Length: 177
Ligand SMILES: CC(C)(COP(=O)(O)OP(=O)(O)OC[C@H]1O[C@@H](n2cnc3c(N)ncnc32)[C@H](O)[C@@H]1OP(=O)(O)O)[C@@H](O)C(=O)NCCC(=O)NCCS
Image (cartoon, rainbow, N blue to C red; front, top):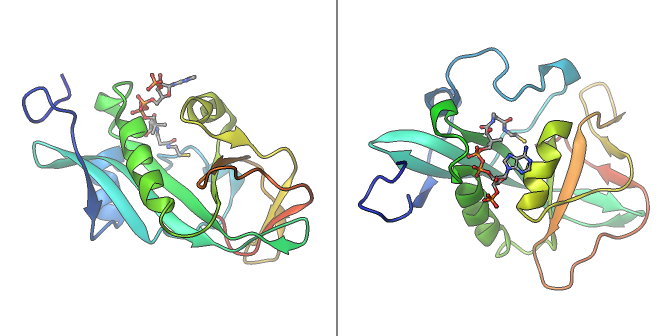
């Protein structure tokens, strides 16, 4: 059982603090807990944090950050989702679904029409299950030495009714999140 209060679902809370300490509370101290070190990218920290606690321990997290995106040459601000993490011993019980769903409910109040995330190819099916779709073109993102083509998969989800993915080249005008 993963429930922390009778048979109710564990609840998602806003976190006022999410640093390396909180991340290692969830994922441990491994060198590359997200499995993306090979990509050699610089990342932005997230600004808003959502978490699930179980018996006082932080066991899941999702972060949000507004990002400046351009699609087909038109400014298309998005809400980036990142840092999605569930404690290894509690995976496969729906905690990622719960924390991502809560983060997206908040993302819908922020204004942008699109959510955006980057992930390793093996996670595409999981995010599809959560309602995300693959961005069908290469995505250029900023890096300290200049723009590069994102080597990970880029996915999007509508934050407003009727939002569709616009045609054209996609550029994230910041570091990825
Ligand atoms: C990725 C991660 C967050 C998933 O957490 P989780 O709690 O095990 O995920 P959930 O149990 O909520 O699964 C979410 C949904 O994806 C589905 N799913 C899981 N693995 C899947 C797969 N390989 N293919 C298709 N669907 C999959 C689940 O069935 C569930 O759907 P459902 O609710 O309709 O049944 C967790 O494995 C993790 O922390 N990994 C290390 C950090 C990382 O890589 N984070 C991702 C950064 S982009």
